[in-house]
Length: 134
Image (cartoon, rainbow, N blue to C red):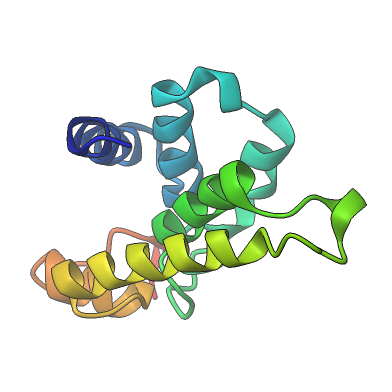
């Protein structure tokens, strides 16, 4: 992926989050817009509960990070039919995920949803459930 593609996907993901919510699905949707041949409704749908640090609790890892790693894994991970992974494909996905985590740590100082929100939006939580901030 070129730096231009990464930057555009990043900006599009923020725009989707602002307009539609669901950070994990917004990251996946942005990447799918950049790589339409990858689009997979089951993967997009499976990310529904990852938003807001898992179920909007903000307790877990960043949903956008999780969604992006899902797409990286879709591109470079092992397949169920090759669960024994004789070619060790999963290690490509591990390495790419590690690199993405490093970028998150560099930019946000953490991968935990609540800490990202506290550090990035002047202490305002953008994830809420039933009108409550977590």
